[in-house]
Length: 256
Image: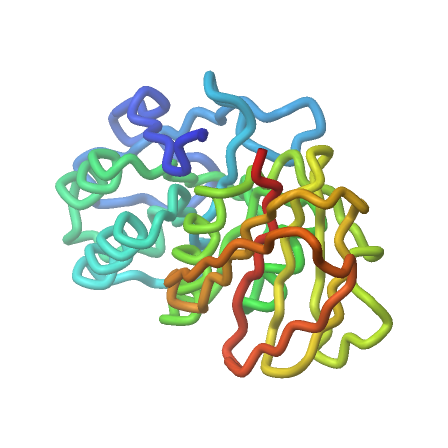
């Protein structure tokens, strides 16, 4: 299984007073020049030696960030599986100095100081999850909230089972009874992933008719998971009841 957190220490070069746009003069003793990473041919994911990888984190380019807050953001990104942070050096308290920037690099974050940004901004967890299932793998929350951190942690838990870059949106997996507004995707091996944004019933239709064991794993909004095995014989369609209003994932994997 591909690692879900990719260090990017080699992408950072320290340079004296280098700016990525045309900001006002800075009192920083140094600034960081961000080298743009490689992308997959469809520009949707990071291109790494281990294959396509998600770029997930926060975009605070237009936000004034105090040193203590940046320290918290960096720590929480690492703890919850984020690997991307976009900041504008001119929006960071000058007293932060090179020390805090160096900490971000040491934590393996891809630090983006460009004006255009490398990730698509998303405003909340539902947009975040739906964008992932639509095949967009470069996403950044614009608000630093616990729900956003939970979203990052939940996705990294899902990655232990399935690879997002090989998933394709699949509306056939969900039946007509879908009052929660769930979204689904599947891969060529017959595995599927469903995001359920709130409590309620969801009708699931397996992507193929094979009567093989399948592992059903539910990942909660905090990244917790529980699994059980669906063994033949079973119906191709069934109803899932989610009683967590904060949403979660359902993973159905074929067991060979």
